[in-house]
Length: 189
Image (cartoon, rainbow, N blue to C red):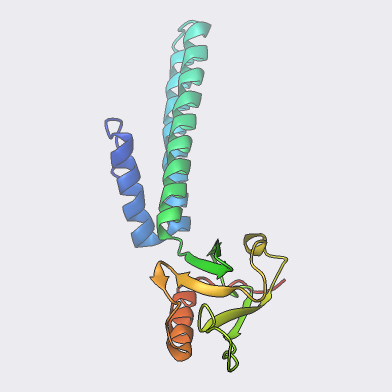
């Protein structure tokens, strides 16, 4: 963002900010963007001060301050939008579809632990129909808002778009572990 100028389009500024996020991380890129916004505001304030010293009318000062405020607000709004967009693109998520009696429930998980206990679906008895899936929910952390519709006894249908209904138990566990490891871990408070 250090190369930004007044003529950059918002799309160019967002692209440059995303590049900075990838190179330096969200925190450092945000600090740099905030510093640049503050420097631009300071430069505008300095100009207003110099105009006031030179004897220009008070109206010029008011216009200068209003312009500087608008400029800072615009830069901060663009920066906030770019941060949100970059964080959304960068932040990993796992989408799990559960099913029970033909009703599907989609949950999105953004961190570990997932809040779901799971196990191998019980084998059918001699006359029973095979289970819907090889993996079943055994427990749900109801303190997690994203799991309100999930309940024990539901079957896993898909993970991040991959059908898991017919996966063998060991393959299912490997896939779930692999996808979960992409998520950040949040320590319990």
